[in-house]
Amino acid sequence: MSKIRYIWIFALGLLLASCVTSKKVNYMQEPDKSIPAYADTLSFEDYKLRIGDRLYVYVYSVDDRITQMYNSGSNASQMRQQMGQGGAYGSYDLYTYLVDDEGNIDFPTIGKLQVRGLTTREVKHLLEDELSTLMRELPGYKTVSCEVNIVQRSFSVVGIQSGRYTINKEKMTIFEALAMIGDISEFGSRHEVKVIREIEGKTKIMTFDVRSKDIVNSEYYYIEPNDIIYIRYMPGYAFGINSAATTLGIVSSTISFGVFIYSIVQTGINHVNKYYGGK
Image (tube, rainbow, N blue to C red; front, top):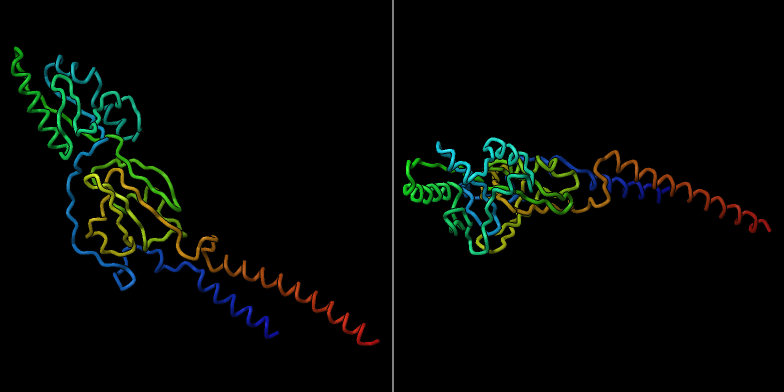
């Protein structure tokens, strides 16, 4: 029976090693040696346009002719509603402007307009200045104003959980992004999450621990459009053992089956020894 005792000791060790503890999954923990600390680098900046971005532009004016000319009769409230729904190719896509490989958009009556590296607020003021300059030459000049939004803003998740999700607000935190994917599963590693981000044409990979409460003060706190979040399996959990009860059930079944087979084999050996020993 000493062998059985050693098997149970091994099973107990496996049980303790396989359990997912609160330390491994809870957020907003006090930083310690196992969780990297972050310097106070948080300073949210407006997103600067990049090649491949799409801009939705709506021109407002009390002159119906100007409204019809630039907006093709589309309704601003309907366009905003469609953008809020996050459709990748809604009807509003017909009224968006692509930032081309040279960083320009091609806007009616203005032509090529350099917008790469600008914020949407800066593009709004730039368009208003350009349009006002053109409209001053028309009889009965009326002022114009513009609404500028980035459309088709999204981030992706790969690894243990995969998908593409729409960024439907100006500032989205890492926790809001995780909430959209249904949180990191119990098998996902929270202490080594990677964010792949393109910055000025260069790809940067950042690794951080989302359990540390210091993350709210870091540059990793806000998600940017086109970010890729990589979530890998927690080491040792590839087989899906996520609770003590599950582990105990598996180990108990395995040991019971092993003991059963051992008993049958041992009984057979005893019968053979008894039979041949008696001769």
